[in-house]
Image (tube, rainbow, N blue to C red):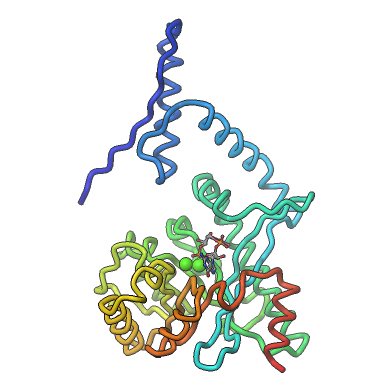
Length: 310
Ligand code: C2E
Ligand code: CA
Ligand code: CA
């Protein structure tokens, strides 16, 4: 284990005498640093005030935004590498304000994880995804599986798998079209609780993917403990070594091992033809990334999907 030090810092003005106000500024900077893993030291100053103001604005708007359906499902296709067809998709949230301004998830997900609102967003996204699948079925479009991201915050709620099941059954769609993505760090930080969570998923026939595999301290031991359906290889995993022979050997054998365990693999963040060729060569099942397509609004995704059928 390692000890991580986090600092808040404030330069006292020459005429400042109010000790409590000085302490509270340092405390604010410290709290900010604690909540933002990118910072180890954070200075109280204009940037802090701006960021706090921005966060307050988003916090004040979020309820209305959810009510007004400003959170949109974008879908990024997953391709079968063998035959270049769309075999699945990942739902990614976008916040589109009334004036059309798009806010990307990195601007609000960390905030929503701190204030708990993420649990509402994730369930809302799942509902929307169920509606999309229902729509495909009604229109006679053969449905594909859509994965939905669920934040680590849900794992504190013992009923979270049941809540997922209830949403899916409310829309009366086969569970085979839904997959829940949990990140590697969510799973590994709570390895003991996860065993029962994975069991609940399995009992309800809901597929689970481990997202961002290889982004952290992946010990491979967990692979035998969980009933995982899919592993998503993090983009860093692919990009840093695909041109080096040793890196290729590592990736090829990890992929082989995962496949022998009966787990499907999706390579994420695939941007180049070289990466696709490499992945095809080692028999990786699926790929997702800008090389194939960006996350798309549902209307455009549907066009791509129906073209893919022809
Ligand atoms: P993620 O789950 O790892 O999603 C993949 C991210 O990589 C997406 O960013 C996607 O747009 C981006 N991406 C796709 N292909 C490529 C590529 O070829 N190259 C590169 N460089 N990037 C690519 P996005 O949509 O901005 O989402 C960022 C993160 O926000 C997601 O990472 C996920 O952790 C989180 N997120 C997004 N939507 C939701 C949601 O509905 N609920 C929760 N809890 N988290 C979400
Ligand atoms: Ca994901
Ligand atoms: Ca990922």
